[in-house]
Image (cartoon, rainbow, N blue to C red):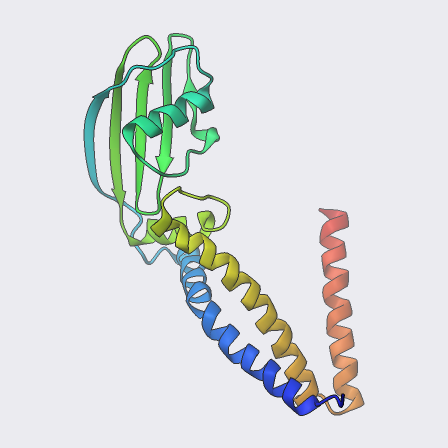
Length: 203
């Protein structure tokens, strides 16, 4: 079977084009969120707060993580429950948060009481972008519609990597023709490697 380099090049070119389109939304949102971290041109303030109480019976001897998940299920709230947000003291007070892209549920309770206090905090666009930037891959929310973003970002990150590698390949194939250009590429790569090693070794 004869190898057809022309078909391979066309296939890689299409993968480059459509891979770039697939990851474009992810890269756009990531770029905007990164710029917003630096320049804060989008508001991240709280837009609304709703407070309410629930009566829920629970086992007061449960460990913090088990108790938080149990209360979440009873409240029928799906989201990420970060363990570093747990707050508990010797008098039985326990506090945790349920985080979603557009809102946070601040849950407060006492192990000696069935009263659960919930504060539902809504956020503006900047905070939503921040949540999508940081929590998109590692924090599954348990909501099928919201978890689409988590799945998409993993696929988009893969295609972004493939697109970058193909861009370098096509650039070298079509633009690098002279020895001086090759010397420049090798020098740039070695300089980057030395810089990374310096940061790693020096800290």
